[in-house]
Amino acid sequence: MASDGAEALEWVRKQKPNLILSDVNMPVMNGYEMCLALKSDPSTASIPVILLTTLSDPTSILEGLKCKADYYLTKPYESKYLLDRVQSLLVDASMAHCVETPAGLEITFEGRRHLVTADRRQMLNLLLSTYENAVQQNRELIKTQQKLNNLNQELQDQSRKLKISEKSFRALLENRVDAMLVMDAVGIIRFVNPAGERLFSHPSTELLGTYLPFTASPGEAKEMSLTTQDAGVVHLDLRAVSTDWEGQIAMLVSLRDITERIVDEQKIKEQQSRLQEANSMLEALATLDGLTGIKNHRVFKERLAEEYHRSARYTLPISLIILDVDHFKQYNDSFGHPAGDEVLKTVSKLLLENSRDTDLVARYGGEEFVVMLPLAQKDDALYLAERLRFEIQSFPWEKRTVTVSLGIATRTSNFTKAEDLISDADSALYASKHNGRNKVTHHDDVPNS
Image (cartoon, rainbow, N blue to C red; front, side):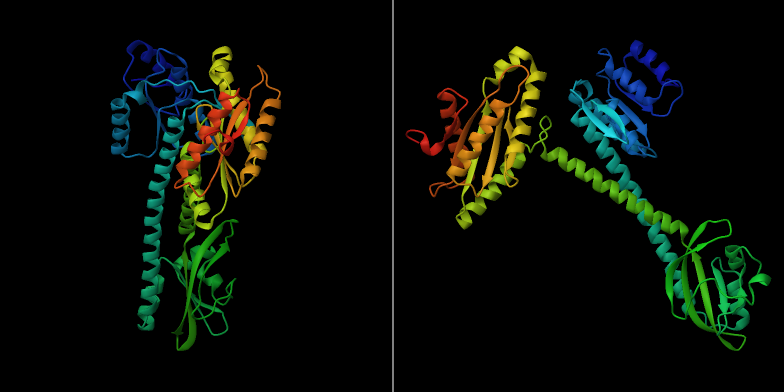
């Protein structure tokens, strides 16, 4: 419908399509610029955009994130994958019409700063698209590797069958696509086929009677590199076997060019590295709270179950602190949600800085946080909680002083499950808030607890 991004913008604002499929590389205005212009305009921001791109380096990924595209499909692609993406974006109304305005994340890469405002769904889509493409390329490279292995096996099988007459033997060597050389007992070249002439860039008349520029011995099999006359490097697979040549004991050396295979193997390693990076990023997105960057509620529940089980099994102490930002709703109403988000981020930072390395700090939900303290008795937990309360109150807040209320529970023999620890800490938190907030209360000190 349009040959460049500028023409597409003009057409979209008139027609309002249900979905846009665009290449990245276009004249006048590229796909990134076009997508960012669409997403910056409220009248077109809800139109889903699929970008076709190679995503060849991290800079391209950052550009994709900054332009807020709804999905990315890497080239070359199969029609089935494209149709699947189109169908999912058209059917899923929440994906197609939701316009998010994240605060943005500043990223420094290769000395340059990038502001990424893509939402988590867009980031996940990009990572999954990159992951999917890497898996597909990895499969192709594995197939290529198998083909090369099969060819190598063929050479080995043929070498074992070279029990033919000298005339047939010579004819066979002449027609091999691999470089074939025959060395006498002292290592002088007695025969070289046309492929060997091409490999060494010399006619056989100049090679015969000379020595190999490398060592080889009967029964040897190895991979090696050879520098050619044009300063290039050729990777070779060397096989050497004993043979007879013109009635004399000799050695047959075959040299197969495996440069392409080595390059393919390097590509496989690079793809595997990219897959590992993608997996790490996906794991981080799944375990970290999107706003504060600390562990999320799911990770806390899993870790608490593990630590509680260990504590109960080996009769080890464990304590839990639940804290709540005092009057957080009033703070949001007075200064706005962005200011409230900064409070949550700062509280998270202070909790991490003032906790032990063995403690787990996580966002429990809303303005609530938890600090799990393995091997901590009541006094240890009270000391840490009081320090956290003091550090948060003493921080030079920009708008007004922020305080927190804290509740603590320590496992006792009466507990039967990890949820008992959460329940007691929550009751202690309620007591702190009931008694005026900005306080620390242990469940053991709550009346009628």
